[in-house]
Length: 260
Image (cartoon, rainbow, N blue to C red):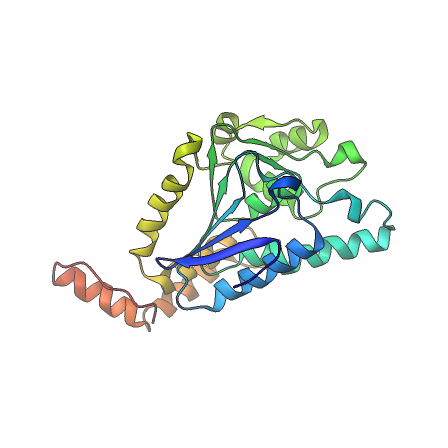
């Protein structure tokens, strides 16, 4: 897969995606968002990919924000289109991806960068990471799901405080309030993510996809999450993976799941 702004490579059934704009602190411009949309769609439909590791090039930034120069002169209508397109093609696509997406947060995750990390299913941060939503400093609010996902992760009071003060928080504080799952030394960031991925790859891929869908449904106002769970639970019974998992359990051996 050849891109101009990201690097993408499948290794051991994991799609490694690196936003590769280190001199720009991996800021999200239109081209980068388009490439992210393409690579996430690829991951969702490629049987070789069992999970995605998403990170930024270098040690300074995961993603330091959006490329402000691209939308500084936008009208209200253009701003709404910008947010809607980004939400649909990238941020919601990541959240709804049937393959677990883990963000390896190395350095700054600000604005659209934190929104990108929050769209991922799991977040692991290096000790030097700094996270925040500074949009009100520009006369804006988060437009890629930040107001919604931050509230879901840390609660209303903390979300409003972070957004209205525009303060950055440390990785340790982010872990304390539930914004990230783990904090590790920078040198151990990728190995920690790979440790989690190694466990995920041992499990049934179709069951994992169903679990992600059911968990996401718990946050949808127009869907009954319990009903989604029941339907997805039932679907699992028609998979070869279910037969393999139960047979392996009864035969006291490790299962070999094929995602079928």
